[in-house]
Length: 246
Ligand code: IPE
Ligand code: IPE
Ligand code: MG
Image (cartoon, rainbow, N blue to C red):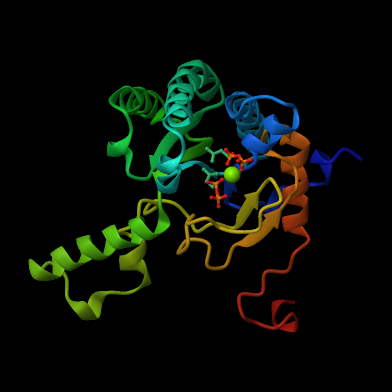
């Protein structure tokens, strides 16, 4: 049986988040520059978005650039920002055809103005689409996101718009970049690294984690389906016993 047919459509994760890692090592293995790996990573993005849309995932968050990634060599950062612009331009058609709306989380204002402009244009043009939310984490840091939430909540307290007693999980959720999105059900990380790297720390409190040694440019539809099938074999107990779930 094909992998895709093994997927139970009634038990899909609502929100899948992917740490797309291993472009550099993929290129190095082939004796090429890191840039070559990033270019080929775009193909894997397309495959992943298409497969998520095909099986009916509602939200797909892709970790494309962390705040820590600003510390990479200047040329690599520039190239990544250019690649983002050209890919957004090229993929707009695919987004429109598949009824996908683009969003972004992170400190978007730190991106080069050209990148911001293209990003906002695609977000604007796809905002009415309803089949899948494609959420790009760009210049993203989970800790910074939480710091910002603290600041904004504090301001509301100082201005008497909110009391300390009112602070709860929902209030905190509502001050994160992901405020309108469901919690993450599944995190996928490629390249064999088993860490979270400052990604959605609050939002993954009860997510299932899936690690694969495949480098990101080699990740494709079949790899995505494998992760979904693995997720569906897990028992999500949320602190209860197995018997209580029956
Ligand atoms: C992921 O691949 C892409 C970004 C972080 C932008 P890497 O560039 O981190 O590749 P490795 O981990 O060095 O192989
Ligand atoms: C995480 O990958 C960030 C993205 C995939 C965008 P990194 O390659 O930057 O992660 P670390 O530094 O190895 O943890
Ligand atoms: Mg990496």
